[in-house]
Length: 416
Image 1 (tube, rainbow, N blue to C red):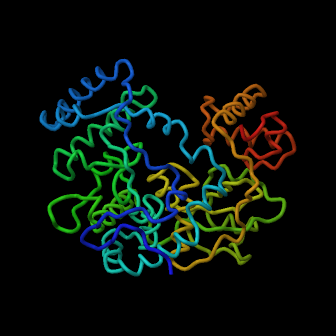
Image 2 (tube, rainbow, N blue to C red; image 1 turned 90 degrees about the horizontal axis):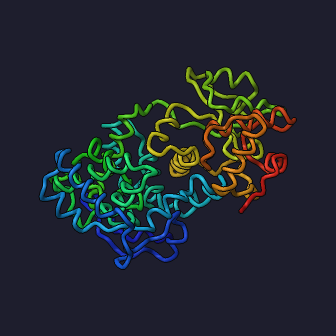
Image 3 (tube, one colour; image 1 turned 120 degrees about the vertical axis):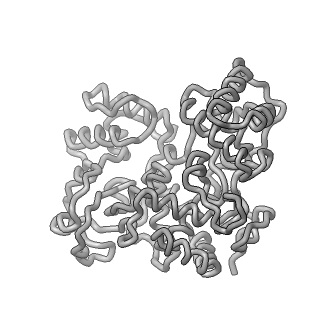
């Protein structure tokens, strides 16, 4: 029998407990304690003072702004983690296998039954099926087992004072101060991820302000201690992005031999057109004749699984702009609902690329006349398009994936 998450769940709230044995090994990031001995970098005190004034000008009370900002500290670890987000530095196989595994699927199925009344209510009011709600919950906090231990005001101030994404995190910090101001949670209890995501479903502060709801009627929007608030808020957020309750997220498919992988470039075509090309479902059966559009996604290149992604795939990416994440949510939801594993699992021997690898790849493509955009170490659509063009010109499978053949042709060493 599986051990349930250490937090004791109930519809009215959550009681915290110790992390269950072995759980930390499945987290993408470890728990991190604030280092009180850290020396603040030059200009940090001035930045804090400036942010405090901005918050007050934006409507945060002077009392909250001064009390919270006086306790804020710079966290160098936050900057380090900001530079190595796992969506950009891991293979699809590693990413998916860590997040969609038998233990998580089985726990998700148990919690789907345990909270069926609450989840059914959320589905009635928002149109989002219960397995998806549980899947988001599972991926974000392993079903409430780990919310993150970083002090959110300090994390967000650290990031707001860093030039890389200062504007975005300044907005998040001010939103966090407004959340404290409204009484949702005391400042010293506002803990979350290194980037400031909070509660059961890891809402960023601006998302919290706009979409969090008080579903249990206690007068507070509490995404840390109220499962009804958290689940209904997740449903409302997805509903706001036009979740389509009539269709799933997408599906695994099989592609015919000699398929033109250049079609996996984000274009959305009617399902009937994909069917006419010889694409079938994962079991070789013809695709349904439904009046919907879909995009072909091959996250591990031609050697890995292929998916036709529907409208809800883009909704999931509105939560987290990572194709890996969107596929993981969709696949976990299906597994929780009773489906089996992928028919064509991703290859586990694919090269893992660091940001430095990807920057070198982008520069090499530029030097050969294929424009990936600014070399930033991120495998975005521009880089995939450039790879696809390079592959087509060099008699390689044009799947837009930086596999070994592409790296060898561009003389880019992997795994550094």
